[in-house]
Amino acid sequence: MNPDPKAASKLDPNLTSDLRGKLDYAGYLHLDRVLSSQEPRSPHNAHDELLFIIQHQTSELWFKLMIHEIRHAIALLQQDNLEAAFKDLARVKHIQTQLVNQWSVLATLTPNDYATFRPSLGPSSGFQSHQNRLLEFLLGYKNAEHLKFFEHRPEIRAELDNALRSYSLYDEYLRYLARHGHAIPKEVLDADPAAKREPHPGVIAVFKNIYQHPEENNWDAYEMAEKLLDIDETHAIWRYRHYLVVRRIIGLKRGTGGSSGSQYLQNVVSDIFFPELWNVRTEL
Image (cartoon, rainbow, N blue to C red; front, side, top):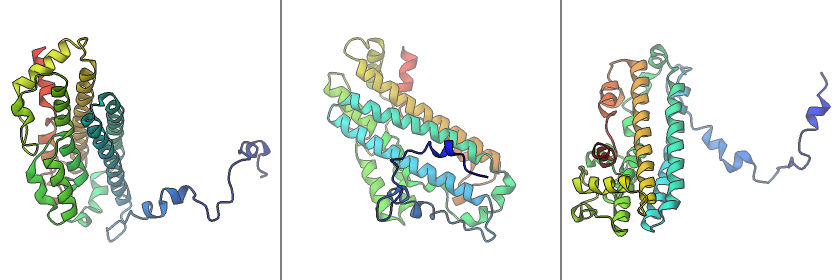
């Protein structure tokens, strides 16, 4: 069959075809490394293990971008550039939506499919994802006990410890509010950033005023509160989808790495990052 001359004519004549010695698509993206990093461990090269690996590797890439955006948003808040941070946080929410939808692909894995390679996972577990933990720390959801799972990787543990002891995105938002005339209690501003935060009635009162009177030069603060709530809500949806997919694949069996599997995931579904932003709804 002869090629369609009309189809051939659709090619842009200015496209570079001689790429010898030049940067091309594969080179820019280091595809040789990216596409060779999927290494199934099952002895019989189980067909479905590749899906499992790619699901988690792509999640880690999205986590990396979210970390990049949140760190940038933190820096902008420190500079009192709240509006510029909105773009970063909008991007984070879209990434979260991508991660929620991605569970549908893994849900095509049946219990029998998973059983063909599960023994090859050893004690490795998604609970050991340091980027997922770093995301939580950067947002303000902190638990020092999680550091013990990374003692075998000193560089990663040091990065997590630094995030644990640094002001989170939520901390910086409260400090921004204090600098702009909102009555954030001193004990909240002076609290140890590594400590687990409990809802404070004084902070809830500040948010109540922001929500009730956004027109009083509070629109930026209002918008930031809503963007944080969007992130919190979408992360809860991601957790719930994670729970459902794991329950669908392994039922009530224990997970890898010693976890209780779907039972643990069910227990953390209701965890939230910003309780004061949720609690203020009751006051309005």
